[in-house]
Image (cartoon, protein in one colour):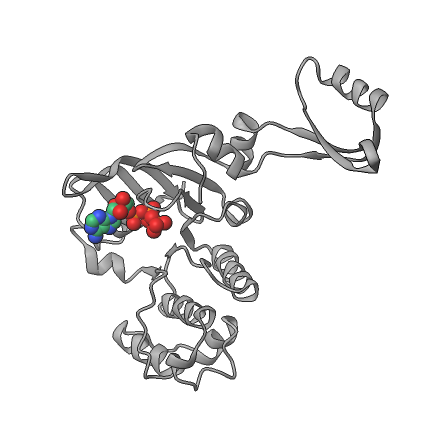
Length: 287
Ligand code: ATP
């Protein structure tokens, strides 16, 4: 049995009177992509900061690769890669200088920096100062930096937030490639489509608590409604939309009536999205 890469046991964190993380527990198996999904202020970043040893939990504990992060922080940090949205790169240095500097700090030898730069799509710009990089380029450099020491666990906090589609896709592909090499990935996002596509399991977090945790498939099975969406020709040739819920006792009757009483132009089925399910469980939207 592979060991769990991450174990969170009843984590609690408060900022003064505000309970930002309110008794969160979960386990992430080695080699899994696990996503934390929730709206702004749900407690995602605070949880990650406890998992990586940046903040000490007020209650509970976090085990990383089998060890308590508060007790063995440097040993564990040598095996994890962290990519936070807020960039902390040296702007007056070039991309390659940043990577060389961090490689030295991390004690990394035998590293093919050019290959890493190529992987994140910065070839040709690696010799330019970071101050002239776009947000997407800086984020790609952050991803490269988090991979310098070939971590076993990768933490990515909103890695594609606000990026152009090309940079976002490049980062998603790197997440999948790393995972294929056996790296465990802990991802926080409020992009439900991204989470659906990348994750083995997702946890919905709302107001500091986990409100659902499962594979995207099981969440859809458990909470999601399957719908038929039809476009019908209305008065004055205007198109109108009709929705019928599938899997109900009156679904066949409703579908029959739809065709008998309307001129149906198009029809297709629609699976519930993780966004729909989040709203169903919490009564609140993600954004
Ligand atoms: P986002 O998606 O906006 O980053 P999040 O889910 O990561 O949100 P956190 O940043 O963990 O949420 O914040 C959880 C709660 O704690 C929020 O109400 C936030 O305002 C509050 N909070 C976060 N950092 C601090 C801080 N340094 N001091 C006081 N309150 C904080």
